[in-house]
Length: 169
Image 1 (cartoon, rainbow, N blue to C red):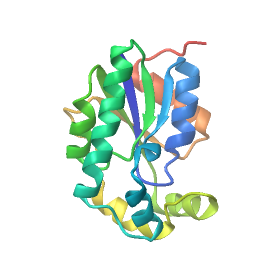
Image 2 (image 1 turned 180 degrees about the vertical axis):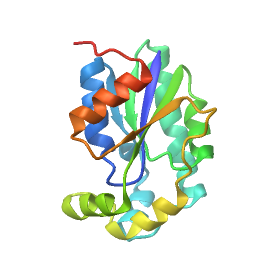
Image 3 (image 1 turned 90 degrees about the vertical axis):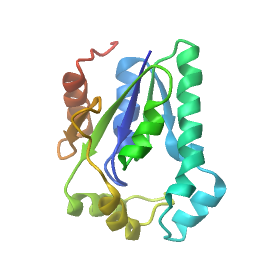
Image 4 (image 1 turned 45 degrees about the vertical axis):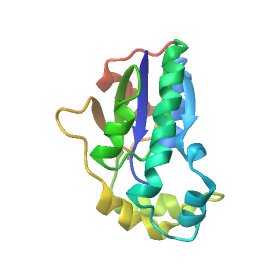
């Protein structure tokens, strides 16, 4: 089975793009934010960046979920910031073929998107720490980098083309 992790900093459009990818591919969708323990959500809502220790159980639970879907014969698309190589290594440890779609954009566009959204626990003040933490995909990592400037449908088209995947419908 294949598992796409739509990654990037806050405001890059992970949820929008991942939902469209899941719909086009006919795969199961998951939002990594839903795997965060309450303590992590409280820290982020207070503007406190998470530590690697805060992230470890969260990443492990996502990898476990992917492995469970893989065992069920289900391909997935999920969102996860996956900012550091070592975080992606945890996700890659899941069963199946785990690939990454890095949504990359200019900091001003990202900040504007974060400022415009409502009902999300991630405050704009954490964007600089996310950008500082981000380690781009390396050549030996299975994934693609897709710019977020175009409309979401075009971003999805580019991701599918770059990954060599065909939409289910």
